[in-house]
Image 1 (cartoon, helix red, strand yellow):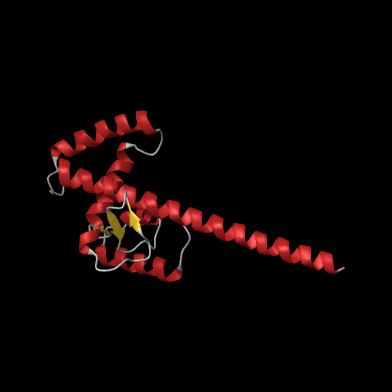
Image 2: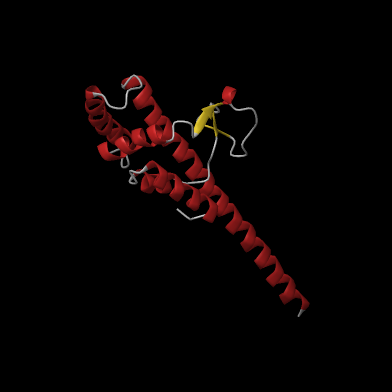
Length: 154
């Protein structure tokens, strides 16, 4: 009977290890994707729009980017999604900061080719997309804090 108990203990330990690894892997992917979408938004705002909130050329640019990126990478790069990425950067311009502006590591590690550190990597892209729909800045901040504090799943 001892071998059955040992087996159950081994199975339980390995199962826990695999569940933890899967959770951490999914979390790492979410952090990297969120940082990447923020960077896409930053590039649209900073480079193509020259830092302005809106630019007539920006809409044409987004339409063209949507076509080209969709051809190259498939789903996920519609005009709407690119506009969401632009708005994501505009609403949270300091979510990710250049390494030189961060005094210490935040625990999330460097992102986007080692160039950025996450200031807050608590939420996934799906959370931010939902928060983008909230027009009132105070309400958006409240729900963001609640999501982080409550550990809401994406």
